[in-house]
Length: 137
Image (cartoon, rainbow, N blue to C red; front, side, top):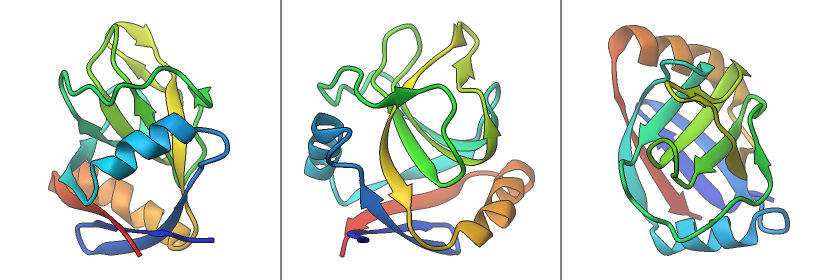
């Protein structure tokens, strides 16, 4: 069941929180909604876009964490050896930073628009940052 609408530039997606697998991360992010930022293309992780969040603290630790999110999965890296960030995979990803491999909490999964990811990724790479908005529906 979808309970989120995510807009990235001209692209719209329905999504769901992974509440059973990442309850603390979902609750912390939901408390920050509507969440508005920018996505840019990743530097080290492969085919993904990310939201750099600096030292923002969502007050969560690792839960349902992975270094290999599948296309359409959002992960939140809670900070530590690298800055806090949110990443959306659109293709093959090995989540990393200049410090090496990282793991982030898989907390949101797209439920529609997966076919748009093959456009979103290259558009972000070649045309630059896109606005992103997460909102409840």
